[in-house]
Image (cartoon, rainbow, N blue to C red; front, top):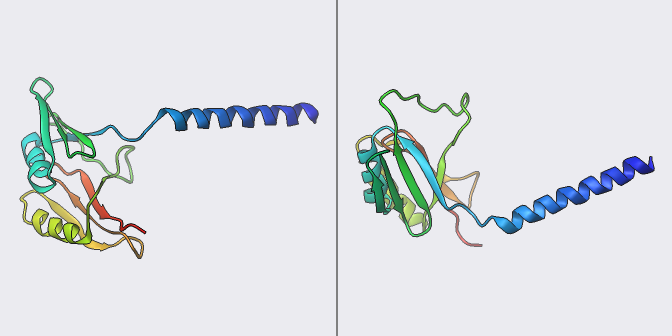
Length: 154
């Protein structure tokens, strides 16, 4: 019994040191990489509709590297034979959630993106789980799910 208790204490101490080490060594997301079926249309969407700036390109991959000042985003061109992501049957990125500055900005983005060819609006801006946050989900031109969300400060 003493041996089991001692082992448990040591295990908990070791687990806690792993958690503390992880908390001290990571800071957040550096960038997100999305595979896209139409690199130019997806690039134009992120630049024209969401305000990202292109920082570079790699024509050999091909890829586009961009940033909006708060997050980096890399778009990678897929081959012609793609398999669409199915959130119920595939492991992978379910969606990318991007913060929006205000409720008005969210509504304005909705008006903009619903007119862009190739963008599918899954749902218009609505309260998220009863609020106070408000969000919408769209599929950008290559089909990646993008959540645009505003959470008012408390």
